[in-house]
Image (cartoon, rainbow, N blue to C red; front, side, top):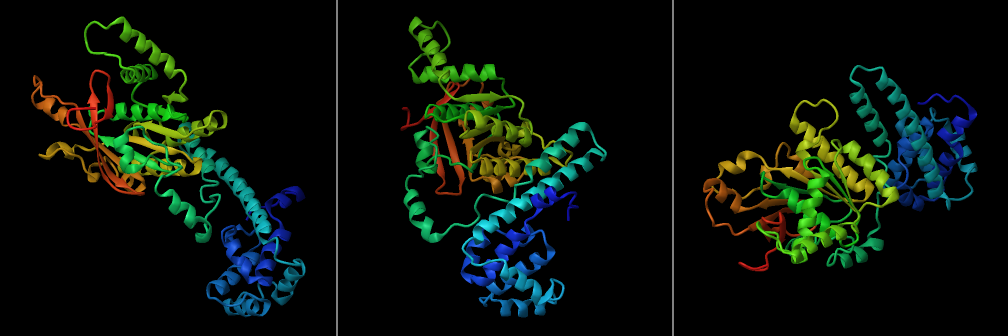
Length: 444
């Protein structure tokens, strides 16, 4: 329990009136307990006596028993706690301070607010302790960031949803996923319907398959829908990404960028693509090597420009910011933090990842979920897993002089928490380093 230094801090740390208000309402009107359940927990109370009374009332409620003063007194006796909390006199004082149960949820909000203030106080104390612990300044800074981010991690805005209130709306939304943002690729959206705020999407492939190109293509298509994009690029610099983006848009505009002389018309289309890029709300960030750095930038960016989608290219170049026993543990921690970021910041996170080398050892090189590199946590945390495969890559590696390159690509939707799995057929356009939908064999 925090030591109260003055009257002002005591008022911020707890409200005996609000705590009594919650408990009194629960005793007076059993029906209000269902609403309070989604707002208050036993540990939110500052007073140990009030924590005990709340626990007793909850046990009665869950057992289907009355919560009136007689039942409460009997339950506290059974728990051996009646005298410790101050006896019948303390229960009477609570009841006398609450005329009715109408304001139960308001009182509950005040109790939670005071608990959060205490959490901040404890976090500050813990931060001070970190400064006295061994370790580098970078490790201490990381520990302080973790403490700060953890203050509200277990207190979502809402934890319960009425079936009566939400069933019709959600079932009505199932067909169109109104909150989902299309990837812009018809064959992908046909299966997953787009990506939604709070979702973690893993886009994985072996090297040279074009996962960065596909990630950038999706970012551009989403930005053209008016969405705000943050693209953490840990592998490619912003100059190379912008050049790729210009080539991709130039292709869409009909430019021919194959080797050799380019026509004046094609050059004009490339220039037009550059001006088109200026209208898109995309920011490239090259320094987000930890989930904490990414989260901090997302929070700041959201306040000024808004953020709808976050891309991370790629997970293999991130670190947890602290020493871990092994890389598997580190990737698991990163994956968990990215999922938390998606949920708490209400954005979709599309993280690129490499597949392990087991793919190369199989006769059939098509990837599987089990090929996700370094951690099974990626599969567990992800809402959607996309596995990119191009047979051309293996064909060229085995026969460098071959001309049998068709550009066909497969994007396997190996996991889709919201719906079906399947394969989206794409076409990789080497000269543009970009992807397009494959309408049917041999055509776009």
